[in-house]
Length: 346
Figure (tube, rainbow, N blue to C red):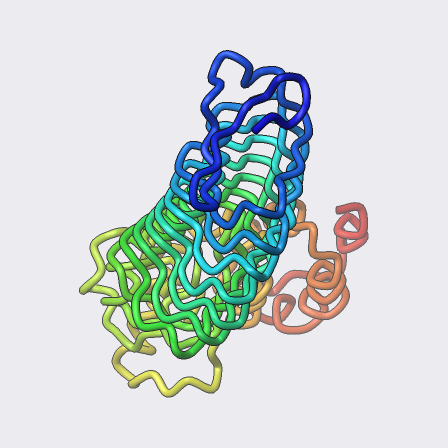
C-alpha cells in the first residue's frame, strides 16, 4: 500500500507496519486508511519530519514505539475506538504539545510520553487506573495535570523532571505512588493527598503546600528536599538537619491552634530565640515567622531595621513601623521618639 510520495506500508490482517525505512524523512502528514485496525510496533518510529497524523475510528490499538522519535509531531487526536497503547508510544516527540487519551484506555504504559519536552496539555480519561513507570518523564513544559478518581497507582519516575508542574491533585483512591514519581518537580507548588513511595516528591523545591497531615517519618521518606511544613508535634532534638528544624519551626508558628505540649512548645520558642540570627533570612520571606518573632519581642532593636529593610512585605513594614516601635519596643528598649522618622525611609 502506498500513501503518497512512494511511502509504502504493509497492512496484514488490519495491522499497519512501516516497511520503507529509507523514506522516513519524507513523511510530513499521514492519513491512515480505514481498513487499518491496529498501528503496529515501530510503525512510524523516527519519522522526525512528520507534523500530523490522522487516525481513523477503525483503529483499536497502537503498538510499542509506534510514534517514538517523531520530533516534529505537534498534536495528536487519538479516537475513542483505541483500547490500548503500547510502551514508549510517543517517547521523544519533542514538539508534541497536546494529547487526548481515549476514553477506554485504562493504563498508560512505560515511558509512553517520555521526553515530550513541549507537552503542555494532557487530557486523561475518567476510567484510567494506572500510569506506568517514567510515563511522563522529562515533560518539562507540563504545568498542570488532573488525575481521574479512578486512578489507583502511579509508577516509578512517572512525572520525574517535570520541572514546570505547578499542581497535581491526587485522588483518594490512589493506593501507590512509586519511588521518585515526582522527583525534581522544582515548580510544584501544591499537591493533595499523601504519598507512599520512597522519595516520591524528592527535591520538589517549590513544594509549599500539601492538603494533608504530614508527619516527620513520611516527610523523611517521601518529601526530602521540598519546602512543605512538617505538621508534627516532635522534639527538635530528634531532628539532625538544621533545614528540617526550620521547616518544623515554620509549621509551629503557622499552627496557633495546634496543641503542642508545653515542653515541646517551650523547646520551639527557645530554639527560635537562640537561633534568631540564623532565622533572619528565612523570616524576611516568611510573614508568619517574621510576625511571630517581632510579636514575641525576639528581635533586638538594632536588628529590626536590618530585617525590615530586606522584606518585601509592605504590610509587615507598616505594622511594625507605625505601631510596634511606638508600643512595646519603646517600652522594652527604653528608646525615645528621636530618630523614628528614619524608619519611614526603609
